[in-house]
Length: 467
Ligand SMILES: NC(=O)C1=CN([C@@H]2O[C@H](COP(=O)(O)OP(=O)(O)OC[C@H]3O[C@@H](n4cnc5c(N)ncnc54)[C@H](O)[C@@H]3O)[C@@H](O)[C@H]2O)C=CC1
Ligand SMILES: C[N+](C)(C)CC(=O)CC(=O)[O-]
Image (cartoon, rainbow, N blue to C red; front, side):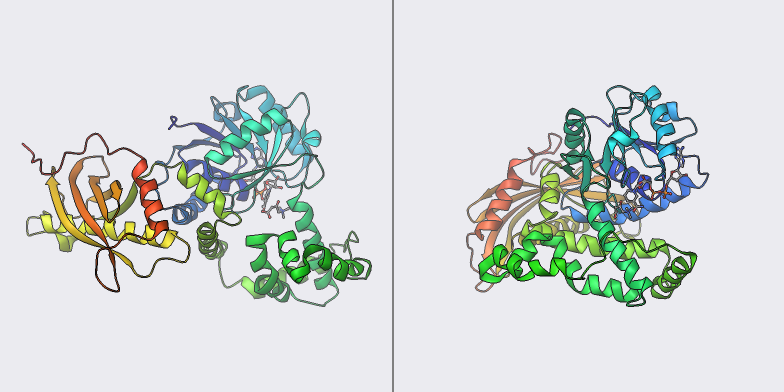
């Protein structure tokens, strides 16, 4: 793995804060430039939400977080940076001014991306600016899509970096206003404004129409695949024959835009308050994030939609399966020291976690498969006390037929190795209790885990005692 790299975030609002979290939680150092005196607080709150959601997507630990810094000087913020992400408000004059400065101060090696929702790279380029559009989706730390528009060589460099931080770069071949996704979103947004303006529906009714129906479909199949199925056995051609005429019926208002009068704005804001005003924005974000994690984990299991992007990112993360916890007071004796039995308990928890991950990762889960312990060897190297923060890294040493060999490495947060526990296990059929070969998908997953990484070099061999 490469050493920490640096991203500069220029504009740390809703989107800049999300980019900061995405890079930081993937091990990048992040420097923020934003004149708003509240920027540090706001980014801190976005980060707190990102920390509770992004790691939940993966069954491997993300790299250690990078360093976050705030700067009053743009030139200082972009020093030695590999990526600059501009996320200032959607105003062309402001973007021009910022990109003129970035052209002067940013290192030549840096990718310069703009989060713009709708401007084209040729709109942004002034005075030789080499900016590409890197348009993300809110929340940037959870949603993988980034629309990339601009020079092909810059897009190629950007794509490699975005994949490294778990994102899905969509290369857009022709620059157009609003790229691809916002063009679609704007159409739905415009129709929704008409529905409120014409008093056909409230904001809540429109949201129900989306989330109770087609919104659920879109996360996993998009539009065209969904409509292919809607054509029945005759497929897409039949679907188009049946619903083609509707395109000429008055089903949409298309480019006709309602005037955003103060009255309409007030009406929508009041309906939105009535619908969601009982929760703060941060609470709504957490609700959204928990739901997205659930959806993304399901997609990961079926390898559809964004699930494949998460799996690809996870495969590039270091392999140990890590369980973290704080040693509770109840585990300690009168002197505050933790006994061998409790250390074994930590290893058992890590083993349960491995079983859960391996069993649940395979399609549909595995009901009748289990693991039984045959032998366990504990090697104690350093005492643990109540209150210590510890992590247990589990390595699959061997996965061979009915046998499984695991090594758990128990260490404190400061890196002190406290113990290793090596366990010999056998796969069992839970219905009969008899040893058995594991289900094929489980065996494949365990073999994959056994392949990387090698057993850590500092792990004492089984049975070895401290001098
Ligand atoms: N909000 C959204 O859902 C999405 C927005 N975007 C795009 O991201 C960009 C930023 O939008 P938001 O984050 O929503 O806006 P925002 O208003 O939440 O944040 C903008 C930030 O830029 C800062 N700023 C203003 N002038 C600056 C300057 N000269 N230098 C550095 N920082 C400056 C402001 O203090 C503010 O913190 C826009 O281009 C927008 O189109 C893209 C995807 C989604
Ligand atoms: C409304 N919007 C144009 C700012 C939306 C986006 O740009 C993307 C998103 O996150 O929905």
